[in-house]
Length: 338
Length: 185
Image (tube, rainbow over the protein chains, first blue to last red):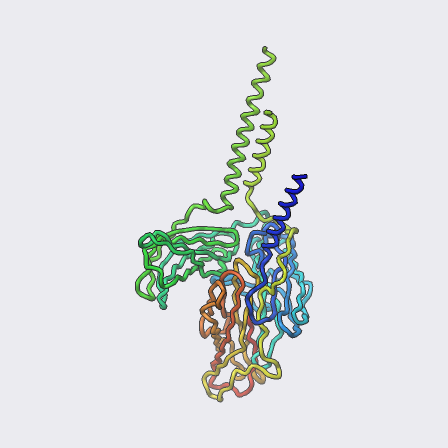
């Protein structure tokens, strides 16, 4: 009876925690318009923040994935939006959609269950997106977007606004290609407006595009000062094999240094840290020397810690088991002799 | 007792080894999905101003002038995905602007159109992130970046772009028509 009560209390606590994690209503008041958002994410990417806003997946040739997107009319007028899949590319640190009709493999593989959506004021509609990879598709990552497009407005300069959900679809037999990146170097500089900037060169060394975010900490500064964490100016989409700068702009009040700068860069669940000693130049518009960043061990990375710890515990457990089993057999042999 | 210990150790080591298996995405069909929280408007872009009855007028110029420029209708991007990785890129592309029959002198090629986003450099109060406006006077020969946002959580950015057309010395008089597309992804 007590056990049941305890279990119920535990379940109630879990449920209330779950309720807390539902995101609060947006406090941002923006001009309403045509909106689009992803409705489904794969269960095995539940913790990946990228998979909750973009369609991120890995398929074998011949595989199919289905996702739902929701198109929202945030205005007080009815509107009709055209929905379609378009090609996209990752160049120079930006994920950019190509014009409608531009060719792309992912466009050929993607079908939507409708081509236009008519929405009453404040109404929503769900569009089903199916990506079917043909059997003979070559391995590699493809980029695209599912667009909701407003009809052209105006007859002179017609303005077309469209909004989309990114598609990052990786194709290949077996498991997904590992994602990885390195922080190669750090460079301190001072902008024209006097604010110090730390620029990190990040190189994508893995097999999938990355959406970078991160933070910088300054420690061991003049008089033992530390500062941070400061968020990095990212939103950079790093293509496979590409290198892009990531900037962290600091307040003018930050001392020139020298500092030990530790930058933590993330993409999805991947984390990498690197550090270097930097000194901000006194003069504006000046860049100091580029310093090679030393990669820090991944002691804090749960994706490494848990499997390593688990493996060690497992090995020790197996050894103990073997020892126990060994000790039993000599006992049995002695008894008949007696 | 020994049996229980052996079984317990076996169970513990199996469990630990299971943890050691690296988390990897399932190859092939991803059947199991979960639904994301409802209620937000996702990533949205404003409806452009300007109708057939009241079109956006970029101004006019005397035949023989070198350029004509004017302000386009404002664009507002509202991101209410509440994402940990809140980032979007707004790119802009243009078509050639034509009048009459669309011959060389009746066309302003898109490479001669320049777009300046005038996006703010500082995010609005309460927003965590950075707006990066695209390069000023961006040539519209190919699609270019109008503005990007990178940060955390909900955000909204508005800008009123200006377009500038470089005219040919032999440009023909008329009302020129073309399309400017803003893509937010």
